[in-house]
Image 1 (cartoon, rainbow, N blue to C red):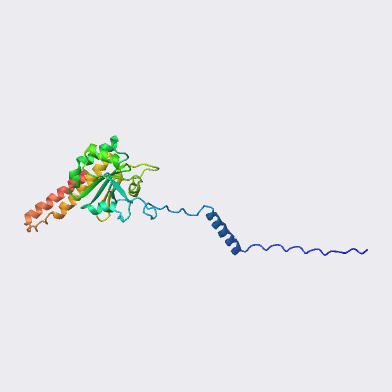
Image 2 (tube, one colour):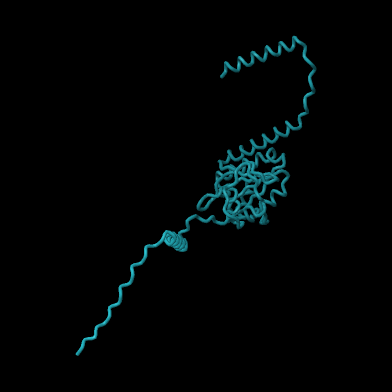
Length: 249
């Protein structure tokens, strides 16, 4: 019988090498795939309590947008409030000192130092508040026992404490002080011990008083023209002062 011969299939042609354009597309696709898996190329900024992107802690000279800044807090009397409301109610600005825990030794020292300096610190229109993550009950007990003349603010979620840059990770409060004026300008923002926080505010108040005194001081009347002999004498004294300054250097 005749044998039937089957035709063999022709071999498939070898694939052409990828072009530069195809290679670039493949790399982009791989990068997108990696991002979808949870490995983004750039970190995403986390949201703050007021819904905006997390910003760096405020520093002296910054102008803070007070609307929504720091979220809602509560006074030791149970009244809801915000930093904006406190600033609006003040005459010239707000002083907030932070403390880790009510009725502990260091915090008691700090609160009492602000108590003892309350009159000179507030005579220029600044309002003083203590701020911690304690409950209204704990802060009321603290305020009553130490006879504090200013309100204590309760921030259990640490929204305001974090916004002013004095939150301690992962949980806690850094002792410090924050001062802001009516326009939202940060005048003081720093951590510090019980005495250091009070001294920082005293220095700020003293500088403000000095500026105000300089503004109120009347301008000197124009002096009469000096005689030739007086002018010579004055020039001689000035020369001697310069020599003395040079000797001290």
